[in-house]
Image (cartoon, rainbow, N blue to C red):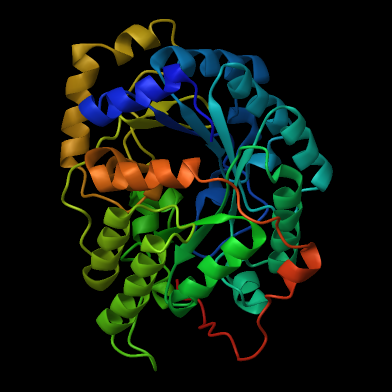
Length: 390
């Protein structure tokens, strides 16, 4: 992504102080056309709770005044929001780098064209496997793989050489661990970078009644890592993540920083979250579909609304800083790449330099055609798809 001097200075300040909210996630809707097995947010979609365009425009202006450099619009599925293209334009017009996070499964190409015409150059698309049957199983939607890959190829062709970045978001689970190196090769072939997010699961099915985090994750033990034909859990994880770290060092388009990949390896083997602390509410924050501000997705929402008249003053106040520190300090942790990896990028010189290098690297060869992208589909072996539990 191209950055002007003002944004570059904000990033430099954030690297030194970790007290500039350079990144914000806006979940524009909780509605979704898929019911992915590891996600529960689709259960809570309510169109009546969502902001209007004029409210989103005001929010975008506030983001800019607070110093936000990049905003991701996610969900749910953001294209379930009928005017998400206009919402994206609000942030682009405010001078903020805008990324749309989408499953791309049921999105007409005309809507991508409209978003691009409004200045959106960055898209992230979910893809967890090169086996269509496996991915369709995860999404609980027949034809999900082919639709997503077709749209990925279309975006790569439309945006090639225009300065944006296209990213595959891949959730790492027991179903796809050994596929990850080939997922990197696939991403590179079609003109994408790739980001890996280790799966987080609720420990008990009853947690869904009482745990706020159950709005986002579910009790799916069959997706947690286990011993298999490839070896013990630790052996499997080490083998794959050593390969990913080597590929990244060699220049493969892996968006995650090396410190985050190392933390992911530890988490997948032990269940331990990174112990380096959290910068939620200072480097990054989250806004729900109704405009409720939170320092991250899993917090209790004890903060002011983003559209409250005095929100900007409140955000810069000592009382907010104290509240944020208390809540972030008491959190058990997570592996959310948009949070933990952002911290890795600004807490470590290695993470910062890797991210800068990847963003500044010239675009490679022209992306392949849709037919060539679809030819990566695997049908050579039965995809492991255990019965769902809970």
